[in-house]
Image (cartoon, rainbow, N blue to C red; front, side, top):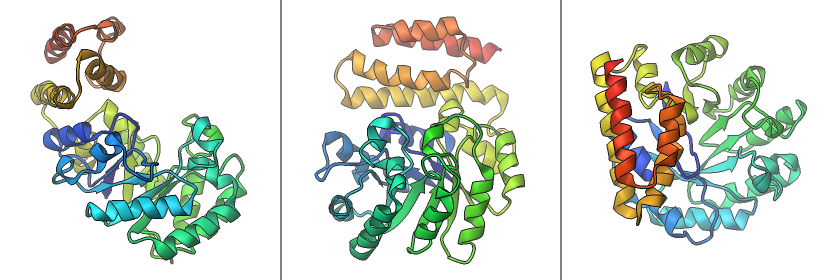
Amino acid sequence: MKFYLAPMEGITTPVYRNALYRHYGGADRYYTPFLANLSFNHKELREILPENNKGLSVIPQILTNRAETFLTITKNLQAYGYKEANLNLGCPSATVTAKKRGAGFLSVPEQLDAFLEEIFTGCPLQISIKTRLGIASAHEWPILLAIYKKYPLKELIVHPRYQKDFYNGRPHMEAFQMAADALSDSGIPLCYNGDIASPAQYQRLLVQNPSTEAVMIGRGILADPSLFQTLRHGKPALPPDERIPVFGRFHDDILEGYQNYMSGDQPVLFKMKELWSYMGQYVQVSDAMLKKIRKAKRISEYRGTVEAILEKAALS
């Protein structure tokens, strides 16, 4: 089984990716939050610079519905040594889909087909796709699968929900199995994405879809950074007495990473507070302590609260 870190805008940054790799072994692949500009801005450049991703297998993700934009971005990525790019056809955000990008591109399959034909003809890199099932209706998925099967995809990553579902309700596992059946003779590798946050959910996936060879996880890793290790080995990755000390070093590594390139306390605290909305589950933080984190105005104040949280967690 291969494990991939899902792209999450503003969260799975190089700082986070490197800390995860150093302290928890990390993933087989790391997908960047999407790139959308013909020329990389400062934020996008920081994502893809090789020196920011040493030792990591990083796949840049692109969000566009214009073939010329995709081809320009991939040529720029090639200059930095990249061999593969991932097309985002999964983002369900209304601001993205209203422009027929992300999952919104799935609403016009004829245009998507023409787009894919053009980029596969001219792209210097291998292309993988991360997709949803369509917008709202079950009849869309077979049409999309037939389109995907026409092209030499490096990999198809399927989040088995519709755009209208956002992240609600149960994934449509029968649709993922349909993809496995449809692609079985195509040579296109298939990856599952969606709602894997525990060993029990992972085992359920394997029972329902035993041919699964790759899994992409996002929110589950943010809530439990040891999850990849646990799933690889079939048991908790760390002894109980090491769990909190390792997490503490992981946390400090992320904090220091953001302090190294962000100016002032507030931008750094914004990043850390966003992470705690997930990490709080791992150390079972009370609502009162999470509130103290959210109210922190200075890094010194924030550090004191985190130290108290980890001290309590180590004793519990």
